[in-house]
Length: 417
Ligand SMILES: Cc1ncc(COP(=O)(O)O)c(C=O)c1O
Image (cartoon, rainbow, N blue to C red; front, top):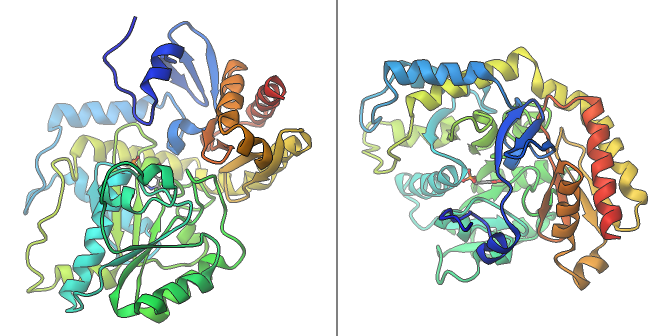
C-alpha cells in the first residue's frame, strides 16, 4: 500500500519500491518494528538519542507540563518558569560562562539563527560589511536556507537556485587555508566561520591534531566570529558536555539541538557568548526581529530538563569519554575486512567505518547496500556520503551491545563483499 507520507532525505520512488521500515517501540539501545523484529540502534536515531529509549520520566515531565500549560508564545517579554529554568541550566553548561541562550526548534533553526545573529552583531558594531560566512568542505549545517548555503557536501546544496550569497569554502583540515581565505577577501568583510568540531554527516572526520585550536586562533586574530556547530557533538556525545569545552575553544556562538532533549521532543539552542550577546542586550540594541513560534516551548523545555538530569545523574558525557578508546578499538577490529579502508573516531561515541574509496568510486551505492545488509542483520547504522557508515549509539550502550554492533557490521560487510 502506498502511503501519503513524504520522507525527508529520501528518494521516494525507491522508498515506494523497497518499502518502509516502520518502527513502533524503543528501550535502551533497541528499537522494534511493527512486526516485532528488534534492531540494535547503533546511531541513536539521527545522532540524538543520547540517553537511550524508553525513559518514561521524560514523557511524564512533558505530560505534566502539558496539563499545566503546554506553552505560550515567548515573543517580547512573555515566558514560562520551566523555560527560564532551562536557559539557566544550559547557560551553566555552556563552554563560555555568562552565555545567553536563544531557543529554537532544532539544529537547522539554530544555524539559521546563528547566521543572522553573526551578521546582525556586526551591524550593531557598525561594521556592516562583515557579511561573509565561511564554511568548511564536507560541512553539514542543516537544511534551512542558511544551512543549505553552508553545505560543504555539494549534493546537499545543488538544485535549488541561488542560495545565500557571501559564502566561501575552505578545506576541512587546514587552518592556514582559513587564514589565507580571510586575508584574501579581507577580514573586514568576514562575519563568521562555521565549524563542526567533529564533521558529522560529511563522513565523521575528527579534527586533525591541533586543528581546532589553530582555527580558533585564526578567528581571534582576524576578529571573525567562531561558531561551533555542536548539534551532534553537544550534550555528551564526544566525552564532555561540548567539544568546545574539551578543547577550551571558547566559541563566540555555539549551535546545538539533538542531545539537548535526546530527541524526545524537538529543540535547538544557540549559545551566545557575552561578546556576541552584549550589543543585542545593551540599551539601544533595539528589537531583534527574529524568533520562532515554538522558541522556548514549555513542554519541550520540561523534556530537556529531565534529559539533562539523566545525562548528569548517570554521568553520560564522562561515560562516553571513558569508553571512547575501547569503542574505537572494537570497531577497528573491522579494519581487516576487504571492504574497509579505515575506521575513524576517538572522540566519545562517534565513529565511522570508511569503505574502500576505489569501491565507492566504482559503485557509490555500496555504502547503502552494506547499510541495508547490516540492518538485515538487526543493526541500524547510517550510510553517509563517500561510503562511510556512521556509528553513534546511545551513550548508555553496553559492552555486549558493542559486540553485537561489530558482529552485525561484519555480517553486512560480508554480505556485500
Ligand atoms: C552539525 C549539524 N548541524 C545542524 C544540523 C541540523 O539539525 P536539524 O536536522 O535538527 O535541523 C545537523 C543535523 O544533523 C547537524 O549534524
